[in-house]
Length: 80
Image (cartoon, rainbow, N blue to C red; front, side, top):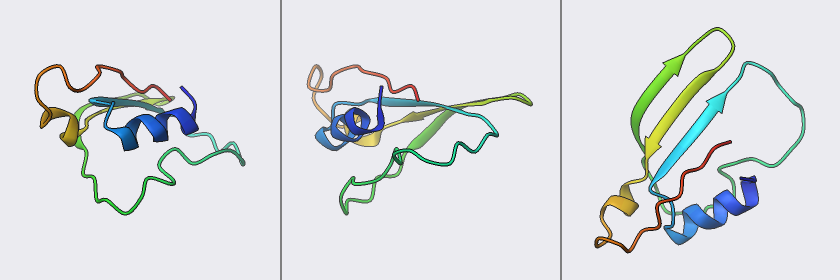
């Protein structure tokens, strides 16, 4: 999923979880994943960290998705 789609889904409250793979490589240019999200303070709940020398896998729960009535949040993950 690209950064633009991820930002729209997060802003709309459609994400209940975010999965990130972090590699120790700087690519130089691109779109920031957590840019243009507005002024709302959103504190993610870390639910998993799995680290190795080449990549760190991070999983976060999105709090506002948990507070929606059953069925209101779409169950989409974010890998990027």
